[in-house]
Image 1 (cartoon, rainbow, N blue to C red):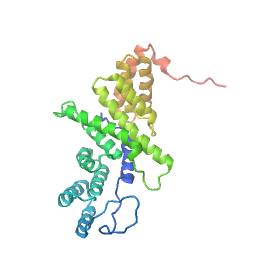
Image 2: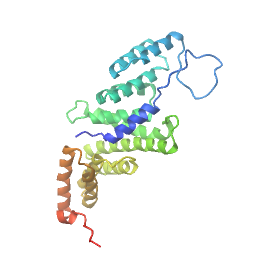
Image 3: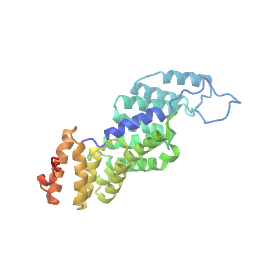
Image 4: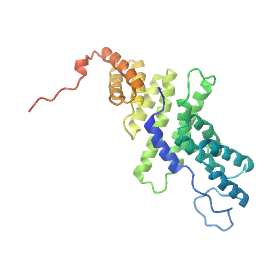
Length: 281
């Protein structure tokens, strides 16, 4: 079962496409006396601008990443590198090549280490591909924690909303990123046996979630509560998971097993768990 919340991926993809720097730089190298304002990455020379334009015309994640690497090697001090790596991230997202996100995300974050969208996307992509048998399991866990924690520190200060976004949309973007960051930290804590921290993080994720209730989140929260013998709270959480888990057969099977266990521990019979039928008027 995948760790990452599919709805959150869709919301974050929208935020990534709209909010990461993707605008064209000025139509040529910067010139003295240009009006002051929000800084936009600029080319310093005409050849740099020409090569950027050629690289930016490439499509497909692999090709864009290669073009970004070649441009970065040729112009190591260029401000335009970040634009190409942001395009590579969007291309890989569109192609659903999540395994490439941590690689390009790391390249991007070396240039712009405080971008919360990329921090969240990279952390979740690492977690999504993590297995217990990974040789670098512990270092990946540490990286996931670092990225997610830093994302939570930068969302309010460094998130640049899409042009024209309403206050409501900006709030939704931020809550989506916070949901994903807290969920990631909760899953990592759950795997490490730190159930109290997992419960705290997953509860925060559930409270912040602006999308449909996510069954994976509620299932993980139920496990964290179950492990602490908080059986009544765990039953309430697993009931939430059961309500929304129908579209994922593997998850639905896990939820049914946990639900049966928690009903037994809470002395709830299947009949008692059924909603009451309204009496005819």
